[in-house]
Length: 513
Ligand code: XMP
Image (cartoon, rainbow, N blue to C red; front, side):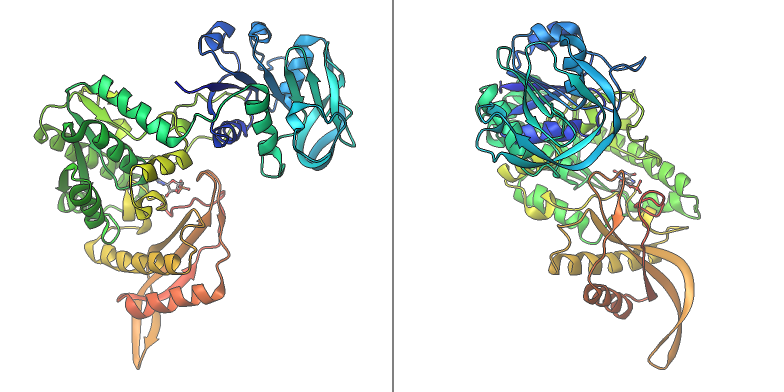
């Protein structure tokens, strides 16, 4: 097992960022709820504990508070922002509402160069603040080690217990040397080695999969996306032909999608692959349907049906594997300020009916997306798969407004292929979250040569985002937009107009349906 840092989550929007930064230091980190009982934390034998920030005030009636026994665990602790207030609350300090909220850039001056958190760093550092309450009396045994203009206690230390507090956020990019501060905590203070690497994880995961699965068979729904692809490659390395992948062609895929998946997984990796071409069935059921939610429901239901039948034909399997990631399993702390729930019905294999009795194998369950990509690269998956942009389960159906017909699908597929090609050629494809074409089934008048045309419109949707929850439209260079527009209009029959979607999310969504 890898050495572990436990992060107690007090509801900060940055908790996952802390976890990722620690892992970037090659140290494994786990997020637990703020009120996890101390014996449960002790049982994990962590090398250190981090108290995250959070939107609450320690004095609020329903403030999230930890088990007081955590201060007796005998391991180093780091309190970030709200975490410092927790120290104050339990260890004899005092917190008061600040005159005004300290928010944004600040300059930290390190007063005690001997403090291990700041080893190797200059005495003056740019930091990011975001707090209302502030420490006015140090907790017992602590001394100040760094200050900002507004705070004499921007960083504090209890040398004997190895407790440290930071009023600012070292995990965000606006604290440029923050990674080094966190690195100093996990390596210098907690004594963690750098044992969390994807090579190490891969060996450990292979062993775990083999011992869980034994000689049983495993089914995996392969979508061609990053997560299911990496899960497939990992499982195949662990159990070879005991794994069967099912790939459903719903007729709503992008150009060459089905071929690439068969090429990479069937021919290259030699994975046992069931290719279910159910295009006709999907398109028949979508015939005449225009309502977006109904389309999604029909596609979701049909997928489950086709998948279930395929699993029966694939033979008796005891396990179902899924590419669930860590952010899906972290229990979110129900504190005001957390992001709202998704507003569209997403269809994922997770929604299989109860009658399908499988044990679950989720070998990516403790990984973040960037770690999944690193693992995939260890396993030899091509860049084309590992760094592809997200693609919705209901596919092109949610990018054709109104009815989905074979003719419209063909038009959109052709336009989409040009978008992908040009975005890759100009090096923009991998820099941003998503770039794709949307078909608007309204006709407008145009002129081509001497002829009048009456054709569809393509909208270009190009957005950047961290996690898909919020997004902003990307300001592509005019030369690239010009190229996209002229190629689509000239090469795609049925299109005579191209528009650019310049809406952010919210209030718009990324997909159009
Ligand atoms: P929206 O349109 O809700 O999309 O702003 C946010 C992100 O989710 C993707 N998306 C889906 N992914 N199944 C998926 O697996 C779906 O049904 C689905 N709908 C949207 C979308 O591409 C974007 O990245």
